[in-house]
Amino acid sequence: MTNRTEPVLINYINARLNELNWSQNELARHAKVSKASISDVMNGRRPGIEVCKAIANALDVPEKTILVLSGHIEDHDHSEELDELAELFAQLSEDDQDEIIKLARIKLKKSKPEKK
Image (cartoon, rainbow, N blue to C red; front, side, top):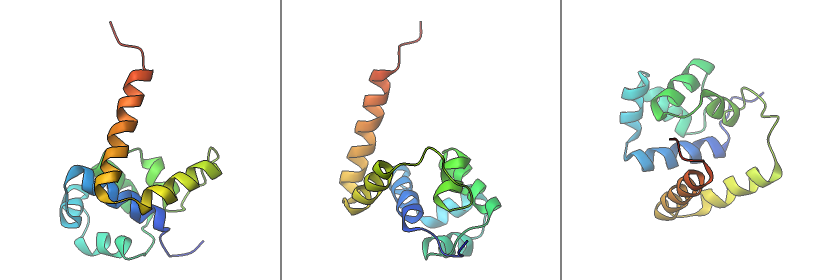
């Protein structure tokens, strides 16, 4: 395994930061890790497992998501379609990324039955 971060992790974190309107410093504060740790990740250094978990919890995403994107664990549900989606998403502007995320949430809400 390499000590380099996959670009998809950096893109994912950036998209989530944009959605939350957070800076990298705010992520570090919420994750309770050093600013240098976040900077290292965003500059391509692969985070350790504990930093991955802290980032996931701060961003309110499943720990597995960050652990898979960082290469610490394999995603057995991984598909070529997800790779393509991540690559296409990374090429969009921040505004377009936000729009896609909102649309996905709307679609997900519509597909779930309402609770009574």
